[in-house]
Figure 1 (cartoon, rainbow, N blue to C red):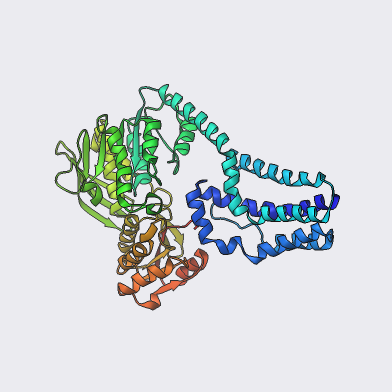
Figure 2: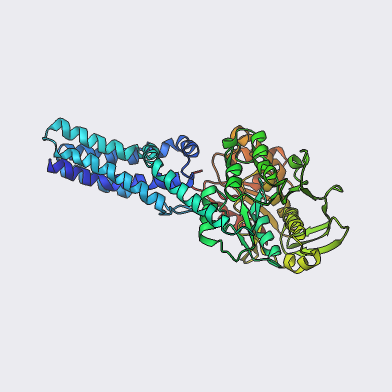
Length: 516
């Protein structure tokens, strides 16, 4: 059976390359079967491409029949025509991915152990077929491997969660503020940290660490006894996510920046999204209080009780913004507090959306005892949050509004409004569209296209699935067809945008991960 064992060795390069690609996509889907199954449905052509299957079949047949040139040719062919694909966000070899890889290797070893059985042509064919199927069907089988590992993963997660709770319990004077919203939560968290740091020692969840395990990691790795305030960003893609985070960190206060159609595919309805976001309000309304953005229509429609502070533009808000003036390179505005004090602020940040986020941060900081006048220099010094309406100079008359992390309708409108303020230059939106909007994906992408008309001079669409929807919206809104450029890659779209004559502002609206 030595030739069968050798055949399995020949099969390993192809098996590992397919496993690695599947693991990468599984990781980008947050190891969640629901999202990963959607990826598989939309990428069947990749899974069952002949350039994958034929070399695997060649190797399997060559190994079973002991035709080594054939087996070797299949292996070489697979590696040549299926190189490792460079992703926008590379595979991260975490402890979890390493444990999953060990399980993958153990199954490979079990298949190899068959070679100790008495040799026969039938057994050779069976072993080679099993190895080939294990490689070819790995995009689906990786979910089975994850299921095998699930008891270990649950035990590891529980250990980390208990440790995070122990750390929080060990600092009873720590004030915990939850931050959530369909749009603006990350920016508000960053702004709030800068404003609160005027008086307090503040720690926030880094980047977009906003899931239970992400928050757990942030607590275990960065929270110290010297911190006085902990800003916890709370993300949600499924019913129960915010509740789980509230159970973990037990926030004293909370701010909800907006509620709108985001992750409809996993939530199922806008009602579920609204109820989930308001879980933070319910957790804090009888404690330190909730801060609600009344400029968000869905929030404004609700009825609230308990310790609640409203902020926005309407007269019934305890913290009200007025006199907003925005341009392509900054904003100025006034904020009136509950005591009637009005303070003038300026910022280098773009658009009314950032003004709303700053208003929410000022409201929380003032409630925690910081006079608004002390916040003026901090607001003036605020930097753009990476990939969220971030203004960048590309040189040579090219400027960018980097809003690559935005993928929801309200955020898209805010970004397009910011682009519209950039006068005396060509205004270009470059986008693949919005995802995870369920049955409304076509409708909302078409509406985004219609909204862009008049706010941009050119539209560059870089996604073959959602591009046609946006294009139809642009045409329905009256944009000339020769101002719409469609391509299959971000790089080609960016090259076209840069090739346009004169100074230009390019809005990078969303940048989809590889699994989309």
